[in-house]
Length: 67
Image 1: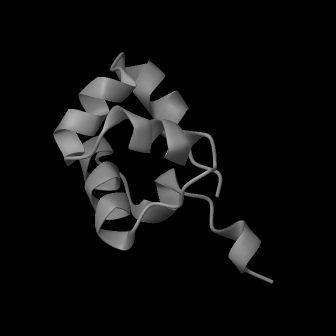
Image 2 (image 1 turned 135 degrees about the vertical axis):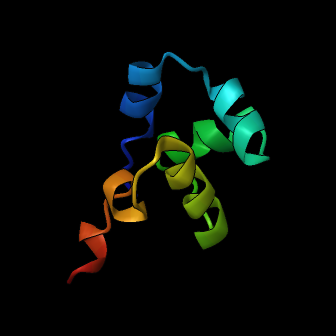
Image 3 (image 1 turned 90 degrees about the vertical axis):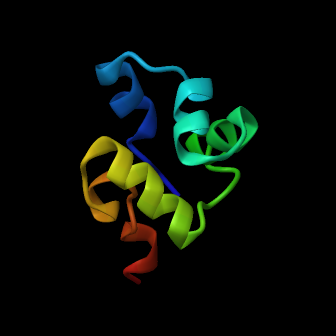
């Protein structure tokens, strides 16, 4: 699943580690989500989106599920 997390982090000048601490996961989890190797659970997607002040749909690309 594609995400805008890397771009959002760069805009806010925060590291993967800082984001991970804010949402209660490891840096490796953020790395895996950004790399498309792991799909965030709904609660985690909510926490990440809320951290950035956006909706889940603004952070995560669900177009692959529209088929």
